[in-house]
Length: 217
Length: 217
Image (cartoon, rainbow over all chains, first blue to last red; front, side, top):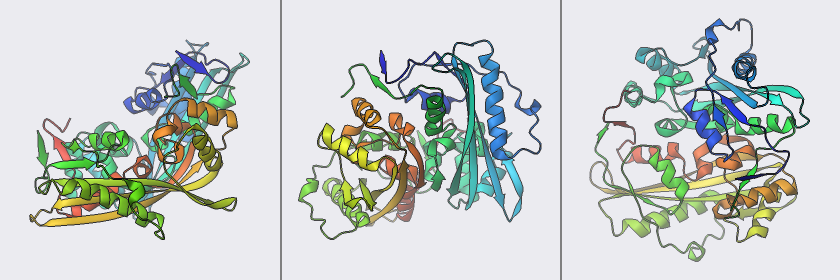
């Protein structure tokens, strides 16, 4: 049972298979369901787009894939990429590693260096006036990873944490030991900025701020 | 069952009653116990100390309170304060709010503004050579909270989240909707920097990097 501070939220659907995004949404205390969009990301053309435009476009495709069959729901799509750009090599957009060697290669490039994490969010559905509306935006967070030895990288890969994550690391869990500092939104690095999500949903006339019944604890 | 990458860790004791710090430590996958130190923080003189010196001193007192009876353990003490400094009023060090009105006053000052969060950590116990050793340090993280209306602040206080937290807010949970960006370590704002903890424990000759048995998932 929840008391909404503004107009009642429509049913919320998170269009993402990511356990991290599910956990982030769960921390808000609002009801939502999860549907994994069957989007073939490799088939979506992104040539010539900036990193921010790429994650916006992919988040839009994910939201659209679910929203078409759920016109009465507020559908949330999201996408995250890691971008490495330094003087030691060409700019590289890092998705999830394909294997252990790929993870080691990514971590070796990221360690002792700065990189950027881009996460895009699309919110699609009826606004507070009942009209269909779509909002997309992205945030960029700068991240500094501490110097890591080859042994430390191998041990980190052994934890299993890197394999399903863009850039082959998590900023939470064991990975928290390796991230020295960030500039920007932390949850943008985890996979979805709660601040940006709230901003987009407010633009549609709703609020994610809720008081659990029996709150004021 | 754990495989340590370096010298085996002694028993680890977290000297803190904070559920957030317990959760952070739990995310690492290392065994530890929790003992709340009976330290009367108000009785520890901190006049004339900088914010960083204050949280170092308080973390040291908390670690000492537990370490004296546990000489074979690695004891971790930690302390966090929020410091507000702008041109609109005198510098204010914010601990936990004493009541609802105090929480509203703090949040009203923090919203639409920048503040700083200081967390100190002390690690105390036998180093990898078996000699007693103590390491203390702190980190500072800059935090920007979005503009919040009086209604939004009241609703946020209704969630119960602010009352047991320095500065009357959490950066995780419902509070994540209100934090626009940070500069520094995120976990330093939650209550204990995992990066700094690992650095101090490495200085004693150990590592917190562990591979769960059956890892490499």
